[in-house]
Each structure stands twice: as structure tokens, then as C-alpha cells.
Image (tube, rainbow, N blue to C red; front, side):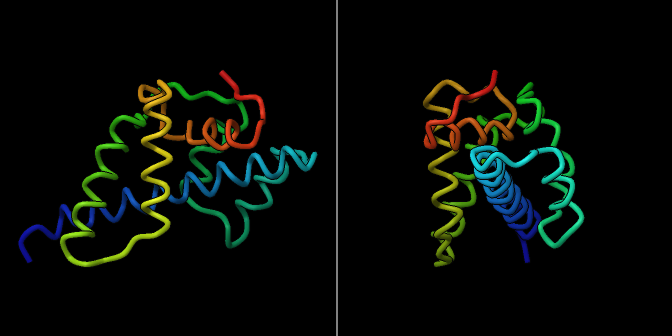
Amino acid sequence: PHGSGQTVKAANQLIVAVNIQACAEAVVFLEKSGVDLGAALDVLGGGLAGSTVLARKKDNFTTRDFRPGFRIDLHHKDMGIVTDAARAVGAVLPVGSVVAQLVAALRAQGDGGLDHSALLRGVERLSGHPTGN
């Protein structure tokens, strides 16, 4: 139906944001556990946890290079579109809603111009783990 393309784009942004958030949480968990991050991400990338997001953002996570690719500001806008569209059709997005709030928090903390892989910075802050860059 009319608008399907926009809906699919919104679903894509939902999946990407949730996936980046899960990867960011895994990075902090691994580091705080003393695990070799690069080796662990290689192992995870070869299993069911592997994803395009993990493959393409791995270097961002390991080097804390958050130069803008797809900015937090843009993902914030897109998560607003997802949230509004889901509300309009009566779809409940519990994990997506939390990630939308985490994206909004990063933006409020001045990280809006960074790449969306900077969701890692939010997890680091919440975990009392030093943030990179």
C-alpha cells in the first residue's frame, strides 16, 4: 500500500538502532570482563550474533572512532518517525522505545553530531566505564 517504502525505511532504522545498542552493550560487557575485545568481536561476528552492523561498526567500537557517518541527530529523527508510526498503527515497540530514549539522551549530552555507533558512549557512561574520544 501507499507509504510502504517509508514504513520499511523506518523498520530498517529500528533494527539498526537496536542492533547498534546491543553491540555497544556487548562491547562494554566484554571490556569490563577483561576479554580481548577484537578477538571476541571476531568470534561473535562468525556466529549467529554476526550482523552487517557488527561487521561495519566493529572498528568504530574498538578504536572509539565516532566520526560522523550516520549521525545520532539523524537517527534521533528517524526513531521519532518509527515511534510515531508504531503508535499510529497500534504496534508496541518496547525495546525500540528504550533505544529511542538512549539516542535522545546522547543527543542531549552533546553527541548528536557523532556517528550512531557512539551509542557506545552512552553505555559506557551508564556503566561508569571511561568514554573514548
